[in-house]
Length: 140
Image (cartoon, rainbow, N blue to C red; front, top):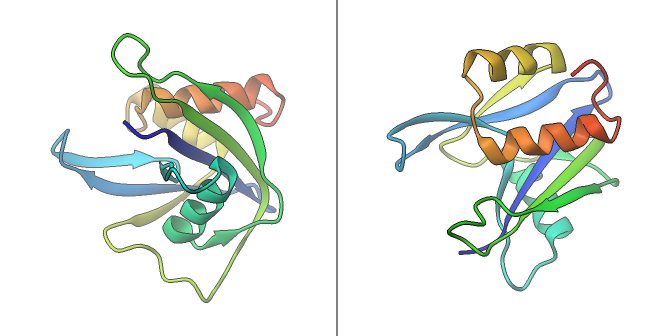
């Protein structure tokens, strides 16, 4: 399988975009951080910024690699590239990808979503843990 990229983006006013979309494998809507599959011809950073723009309409000149994880080492050999994008800004010329509903949250509410099960993607919770351990998410 392809490698994954996922992005924790934070705006200047400390809002965090989440994407809600239908996932056939679980037959329901899923709440996730922006992200996607890494195409072989692109770098993880370029793919992450492209996915962020397509799924949320956000852009940034800054992107930081939090780490590269193995999402399921017992079965798969792909990797999960985790990124942090500070001070993301809305590009008003972008039309968000069809099938995606943009949900705005903050760190306190996101923490609650994890604890009550509304946000339950294991790899993405790991990304948030990396961001917290690296000091990007105060109070997480």
